[in-house]
Image 1 (cartoon, rainbow, N blue to C red):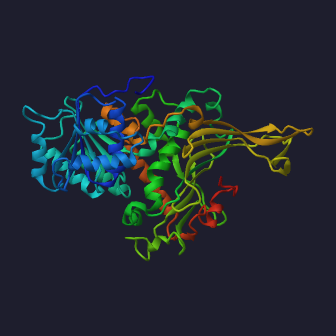
Image 2: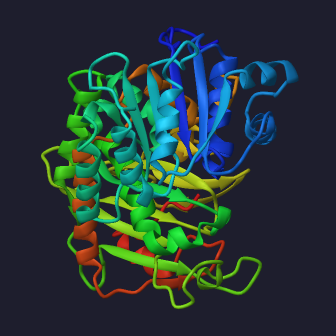
Image 3: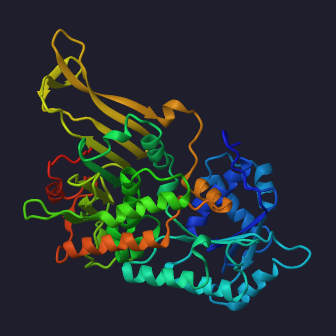
Length: 499
């Protein structure tokens, strides 16, 4: 069971997944719902409806889900619990473009054996199908009025457009049929445990918040590095969007907002979203010079074990899409003026890691000699400023690098870590991001979901970056590296944290 607070969904609900035969449903959505069911977080009366074109007869849909759960669930899948879970599953065959499929779905909410009237629609579908699907939901009477019961909520997966114009068009289409309070734009990064802990760490500890400003912070680095390439047949999607649109426009900007925003009035959705909006409004690319450009785009190359991006399936052989991005950004407000924020993300990189590193300024006077030691062998090094690290994945935790005297007859200091790791503190598995986010959507808590004005503000910044990078083609880099060497010039101190 969930501890400390009762987070159980109280109201009966029908959870409809559009695209129920897809990869996201098998790998993330069903395992998350199964875990919530096993932990007693779902309402006693709930139904999960899988909506897709494929024809699953009888128990075939349950068999499909059972196979997925055995592979992807973080909890063991026992036959008794699987049978109980499957008793809440039904399959609805239909084509998203067919009005009759929605009419027959609506009929399931009517009559003596009606499904629970509260409904959550999860759009695990191609972005181009979002508008016609919501239009059909509305035309079929499946969307109830806002702030009334039974309620309707719609979860939308990224990408939320490809640029500012398309994001605005998507928002207009959604808001033509739904109220903003009914739309849940999901970014799975915001469901990760360490991301949740950023606000707790900052605003529940009086010793840290006073030094989160330009007086004490030298710079901030946010890295989201992946070792994989075009897994799960993502070549066509990635060739259209690239690293900037796929990762920076949502994941990295959201992390940036949480670590730099002002203290909110409360922990409600409105207060936190308003503070994030202030950061996005003040965010811009840093000034660029030939020696220190504000950005670098890269594309992985090579003919080794990992083939070049241009040779990936469903990728244009002449593609100029970036698979790596390094950026230097500025936040034009009182707290952060003059503090560079470095963003870096890429595919086929040296290590899978997502982390935020806040490097503080060096002491005004260098009173001590700093050493780096391996065993009893030490060498003098330059000063090592304090660094606070939020590690999002893997090995989740919060780490503070400080200088301490090395045990010896000499008065020298070396860098040591004060660390809080989840694995060292708790033995149980951390909740998966989708578990938290689906539970929040079912409970009507939109705090961790993106508001329409946030989406448009993010694309405003992306367009400023694209204008700054106009005419620059991605430079090649070797798979298994930290990106192209040219990216080092983006970082003014030339010391990307590559550990």
